[in-house]
Image 1: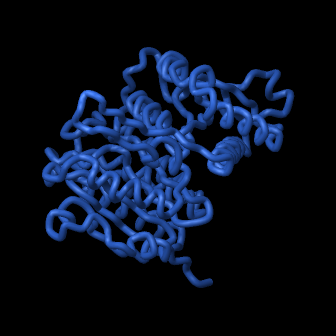
Image 2: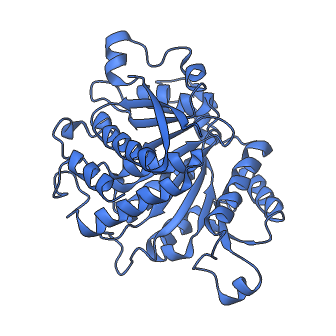
Image 3: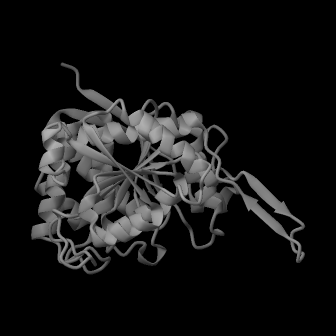
Length: 369
């Protein structure tokens, strides 16, 4: 039988991005060798250095080029010599929009041995997923400025959604809940829920009491889609209350679904509760196209070249990529190995305090696959 070969576009990015990407690829190659598939990797050095050297943020055909790949593996974007916003909007947002990566998928999971700032909470309490709408809402830039620089200046930026954008995001959240619990119900369900045939829960995070137009659409669509998933329990939470419960009772959540800006905010809160940016991975998902996977931490330029940055998030992003590509067992193996390394080997998840170098952490994960 011919070996399956996945075409992967690699964007190492800026700062410590290339260092963590190298470890992610090392683990991916080890998993491929174990499970009998392979990667054909092509590197694109788009980022701060490319912009400073050429004045070009992205080539005009970047999206069309990436559509020829099975997935994109990204390091980090952000350069101290480039004004904030140029690279982030010109690379990250542009690729998300051009490739229609309409889901930002962010697991919030506390791994064994990783410290959380939440008192009396452990891995059994912090294990949920945020499904963030990724190509609509306030980030599309609808609006403008009038009479700039005067005392009469007006700035407007509008949150705009259509039914299609909301429906496909909400449906992805219900599918995610079903996939998470196809073998066993979510531990947070009551015995009554389980007796009623429920296996998971999707919570809509919104602001129906103030954003009455946009979240009227979200709420109606949410309960309409829910009719197709009688095995999934539904819940609703205002975004401010969501932040409160993510700190006080994170075990209440299974799958959270929300709009672009709320998702951007609550996922960083979630990342800190799971031990910080060094262990937080995410995916920009087009379920029917090319998706991009990345560690959530920034480029951390002050640590560049020192070999002290934590690669765990990049390694977990690689596992997410494998799961998306259908290599589920290999993805699970990587995650189990990470759990072993965080629980038994690493002293800390902080840069320079891990007890190992960046490459040594990668080696440990490979060793324990």
